[in-house]
Length: 498
Image (tube, rainbow, N blue to C red):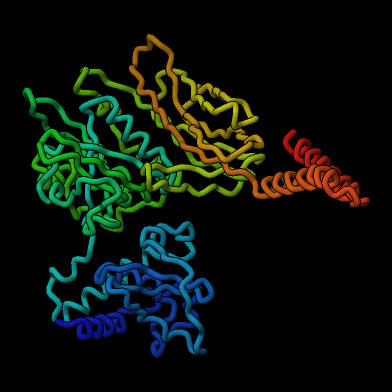
């Protein structure tokens, strides 16, 4: 079936499936049988992306969504709702996760409308001769599993749950734990991701397993944790003990509440592989990256499932979450990505105040412990160490971060960690999160300092030139002006820096 025929079949299926129930709630009064596409753009674009691939485009002026296909041709089945020849321009490229996880879900009802429309479209496509295998869509994820084999693996899981949206993480496996269809897609160089893995959706799970014999484990329970997107992946060689590295960006949470998750993933992995492709997780298993979603994931855990195989100890992981760094206590700073290091980082501005937001959520509370934040005192004028004593299960707090005025832009690390007292009965797992920080200088300071240097040069240069040009009798004017400007700019800079 060629593309035009396929597109016509989809257009007919959508036309038969659009209804007042799939329309944007705020536009239901405008919806009618002759203009069925009104208020249907977002959910339609989601379904078209699922079947055709590509990306979803957005125009803020029209509040309109449509598709761009992998061949760079645009596909818009709902633009006819605009009757006044409005201009359509691309404002942004929007991920399906963002549309489905909208904070305004109650207002837009996007998820509910999407599933209803998808069900209707699928039914109509089948009636038009589409085969079932053509209607599956693209739900394939690369699943990463972290287990209780070592305490540090549990710490990785807790850190992944605790990290903010778009934060980058790094998993590594020996090649013997990967199936051939994963190993064969890995290149040998960093920042050279195989084209078939670009923007690959991933899912992260925690595995509780028990040792049944030397070198053999039984998979007891799997917990879905987090969704994300693959950024980079490569391997150090082809031997079974060589290492595969995976870098990924965290997005939403995965909440698969059905009891058959462990059974499904065991069939796919054969209780051997810890990274593999699977299509178990669907859009209905996605939770938006909020505190409520974190708590929902935390509450799934059986606390006895943190027994570590390597030392046979049951650990208590502190559910500590880092919300983000905010400016003026309201606007959260976006996480940035360094392609060279494959790490997340925050950009701060010198001479500004920020708040470091965090909290705890403890199902059981075995003992009091401390949360500590360590900063570079050469970069921050706020305290270089904060300590917060946790003596209850639920806490939310923020710490002030105030950057100094600097001589140049600098990189640093903020360390956020937990500290438990020694000799307690329940063994803790300390959480350590290192946050790279890039502190930029204000452009105004650079302009003032350059202007100051120029003024000083004018004053000094005028004196020097007057020694050569002895008949220049007004040399003192640029000298006075130059030195005056230089002194004023130095005073301004000194007062500003404090």
